[in-house]
Length: 166
Image (cartoon, rainbow, N blue to C red; front, side):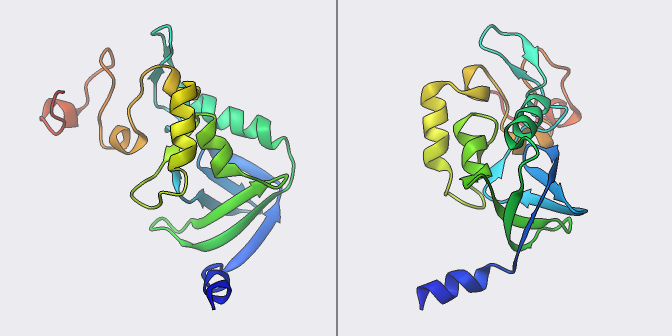
């Protein structure tokens, strides 16, 4: 019974060469695929490195994913669609979870609002100070809402007091 419930949740499977749109979104044969359960820094997002220098961590994460995939076929199990029409999927390359790889290497975080599946991988990354955990960063969901690191130009959301100071 449980196996049939799990199988029913998968709408389809797609395999092919992926283009990395950003570290949590791929495109395979023209289909946009959002990696379910993780959230990665946005392409324009800046983080502080361990030596306190600003870096474009979203771009770094996307480039690292592209290098890791290395034109190998990506297989994604589609679970549904998000509000932007992208397919939501669990994806693998060479038998390894793309989401797990991203999170354990500090290129993405567990998106707890949608899944706790990658929390153990995030805890490993934090402990190892991998990727974004080596320095300072704003969680991607807060960054999209307008929160920025100290030293960056404040956004309207910050000026209006949407984010309380710690």
